[in-house]
Length: 238
Image 1: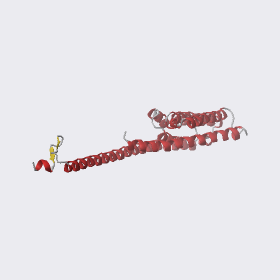
Image 2 (image 1 turned 90 degrees about the vertical axis):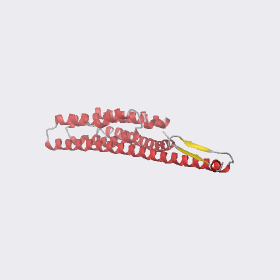
Image 3 (image 1 turned 60 degrees about the vertical axis):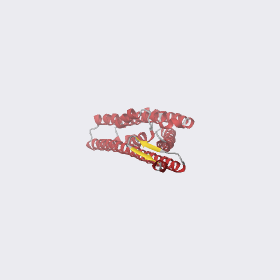
Image 4 (image 1 turned 180 degrees about the vertical axis):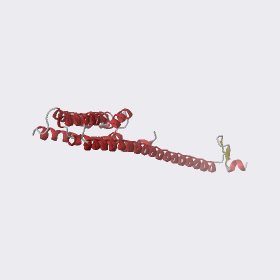
């Protein structure tokens, strides 16, 4: 990896680290607010309230970890956070639907799978990215299967099917986009490296030419790869 690649990667990593920190702050604030308001007022109870409390503990712990070790933000922390929220969102949606039989109650959980999909692709820089990516691609499948088994309302079935198509279309689109982006970054880095190498060769050849002109010695150069021979004027006039 050359200096350009490292510089470009470092810039992307800094952006990703900031995104992870911001996501943790939002998630922690939301979990705390939900715990204090919704649970405190009795709007949410049972297993769903425990999920909110667990989310506050989990995101709070990861927020402390990323503050102490910022470099872990785009590896262990983002990987753990992604896996946790896959479990959290599925469990929350299943619990909410099982307790009410109302699809509307699952919307707060269903909606967050889309930003989670983007979050994984743009913040994970190698921590089991492929394996976690498979889990993210599966995403809301457990909660969708749970609801489809129980649903009898045609409108509800249509809503779940529409959500399913939208999510997996997003999976395909973002996967295609990130692959194209990575290829473009590699091509740009390769082109820049090639140009830099060519410039270095030209500068070296110019220095060699000027040196040969400045000396009274006989100087020649053979390029075995291209079968070229070069000599200075002293050798020509000898």
